[in-house]
Image (cartoon, rainbow, N blue to C red):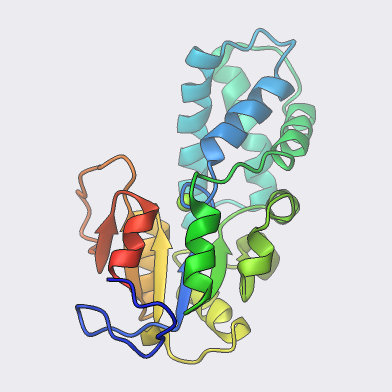
Length: 239
Ligand SMILES: [Mg+2]
């Protein structure tokens, strides 16, 4: 139910939030589109075949981000290593260092918000503080955010690469809480598309969580979100 202008109201579960912390990629931003565009631009003269090669890149990138989330690889290594592996697997010739540099340059230009995001933030902004917590590279994320109206809605923007910890470490969420001028994790709702980083991380920080499950995936993990939505606007049903 929507209660315009009434911030003291509790939702159907008796919860009362003051801060909503969003994940960026896959939640507010269409990262796949940004990634596709940047891959194509960086590999354009290198026999890159989108349909075939994109999926290979994604699998490799995902594996490395999982290692990064576990603290087993540094961001600087991840940037180049994903292309080293990609070139090896696809047989595409090239220098992973220069391709990585090209890719990041194009990626930093790719800022595509999902439809309806700004309207949702406008609505939420009337009643809540809003923040952004993202696992990513600072030069890429800051540049992308700045190309959109997103920063104007945010009481805090935390980029893992800048603060040296990443989701699901609870400290990144607690930093966001502090920067937004709040103190109570229980009055915070974390919204994101990743069970392992957003939902697990929010839980670790003592916050409620909302899993943005756009594709209707089956939750086979032991991680239990407080809420689950298929469309972002469904969030208003719980707030
Ligand atoms: Mg995400």
